[in-house]
Length: 381
Image (tube, rainbow, N blue to C red):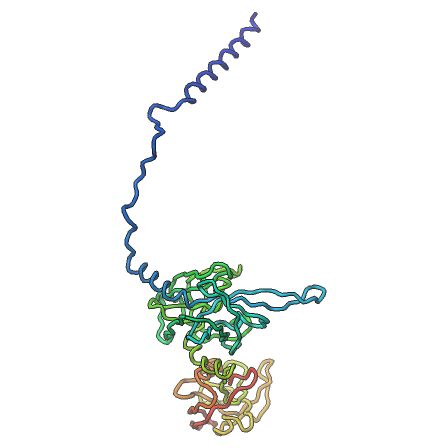
């Protein structure tokens, strides 16, 4: 009997728990209702502030000019069998004739190019001109009612200035706009080793597929061509770069008319190491800045200017150099302190331009006016 009592007590407790939970929690409390939900809605969409409205206006005005570019290239599998691969990038229409400005790496080695407009229409495209060293290319489509962009100026950009980017990230999110500021303006090196002078660094989100798209100021004018990002993962990390639009405008006519850039050259081989105060003292140079000429191409612009190369072969570290040549310190009124400075000055000129060169022959300061030659191959100076 004593052993039966705990069993009965347990049954009674379980029954009580079942009845309590079933009838107490199984029915709604008195304060709950099953009627229609009463929510608070805005009477109307709130008005946009001035900055928001400007962003909307710029987007509506510019997005019809931004295109998606798909390129088909031929690669080879493990067994050397050819196979087609597609890439994607962006570009923007610059005139009513259908010329589109984009990056060189967007169209590089393409066997087939197709442009998709904002209205989703597809057009085949032809490469008109390309310049690898500037990472620029012009392609062309034949289409009606094209809306070109307005090209601005990149000469007076300031860090902190607001910018907008429009493109097709990853080749699938067409007509995407992001915003940010100009983070810095500086020289950067591209993956292939070429340099972009006065590249525009921005924190506006730029991802693969945005390459070739426009970077805009708050007025909707193109101030740069989005070209690359700095990221360990390959996706946007808040550091993107754009080619300044002035660099593109300076070569645009060459690309359209000649299919290439008629890059100028002086025809010299400069010292391959940076000039330092110590080196200048060792070589008894009149200045510790400038471009020391090691060799001069016979008949070149430098030769016509009377510039002379070195005449004594020595070793500087692991470098074999020629010393005794002239020191170039100024071109067309701009100081030349390094080979990079000289390349920057030359990028602002075309072959056939006449420039004044200031140089030192020994301790004697001299100047000469000369017509620049056209560079061949990869020659830059």
